[in-house]
Image (cartoon, rainbow, N blue to C red):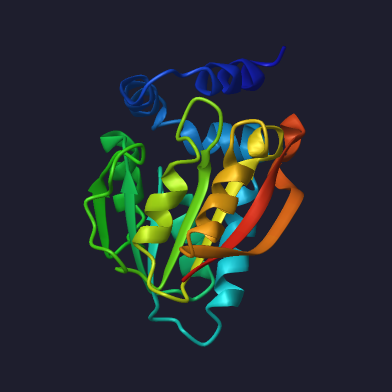
Length: 209
């Protein structure tokens, strides 16, 4: 087993927000090299590109990057011309790396397993990449991502293919639709995630209602 695979297995086995926080604080310095170079982590760019097309001609749209980590998604969004991006993440060390990129309007510490410290309908778009996965944040977080999105706002998320149905994400999307909170606009399984580790994701677009 490769060192990168062992690292992935470790983070996918995390059991609590406290474990996640300490692990990502420890990993922050080498995270980007390990994931992008070592694992072929392509999901941030793919998801950011998709959101940028949904926000075509709206460079000043207010975007929330939920679980922003070191800012890979924020940098990708900026590269696609989006100018107003806020980020939240559980790890203070990861947030420091995100802050150093200079692409976020605001950054704050937040636990996506709890209610976010944000008002209802605060953002024109929400994006969450690499967080809805094993050992991290469960499907209940989708409710919060939709809550903070303005009516009509796109909510772009990645969910590992292997847990999309088995861990309740598919069902949670169905529940949001039934409740009239959001509709499923796109579902693209087998999307690029960690290409060097042969891990794929479902790239999902919800529309807040």
